[in-house]
Amino acid sequence: MRAIEFIVQVVRYANEGFNIKPYRSKAYYHTGDFFNYSVERNNLHQTVNLYKRDTDRMMVPNPEGCFAFLYNYDISQINKTGNLFIRSNARKNVGYLRLDEVVYVRNIHANMKQRFIGEIIHEIPDPYTGIMYEFPKSSMYDELNWVQMPVSLFLERSKEHFNMFGRMYERISEVYLTAEQVGRIIPHTNIFFLKRFTKKYKLIS
Image (tube, rainbow, N blue to C red; front, top):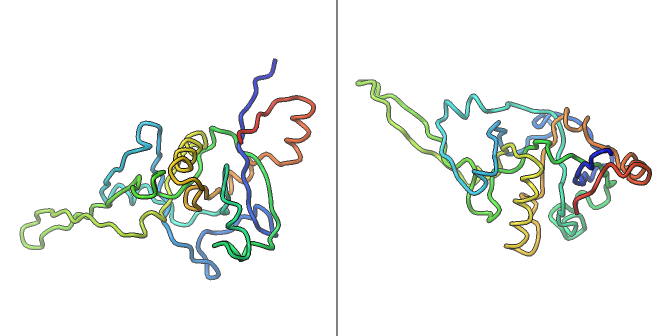
């Protein structure tokens, strides 16, 4: 008997579909840096301060992919009075991701206060003595940075967030899918066929 795979719906509002393009270009300059810092279950509620030399190694300069929403995003954002009103007339594109897929999420806890990566510590030598001094730096915009998280853990953070606020804020439900991940999206039409005839997938909703 074939094992059942659990999947989650991924949605993108765009007439061009799950199109792939550079995160930053002359036409688009989005805010937030990408770090290959992996959030696991044991640090889902923790904040870590990292040295700049470490974050430099973790940084992905300019990935290619697209923005999307996972799980129970707030659909009221996509209307004429919502914060994503520019997408109100765009086509809704639906696909599915497996729970073991690792996606980029915003650098913020379920409570919308703490961050996964907190301060980034810069080390600057004294020009006369060579002694290294540490200068922790942080910004209100650091929560716009991106860190990595498995979809299964993304669901836990989302449910915890919803229980706190009674709604899903954009920064919690938003993900950035890389070009490789877009290629692994299971199309909506395939799911309909497979669920009807093989019962291989179970949608988490």
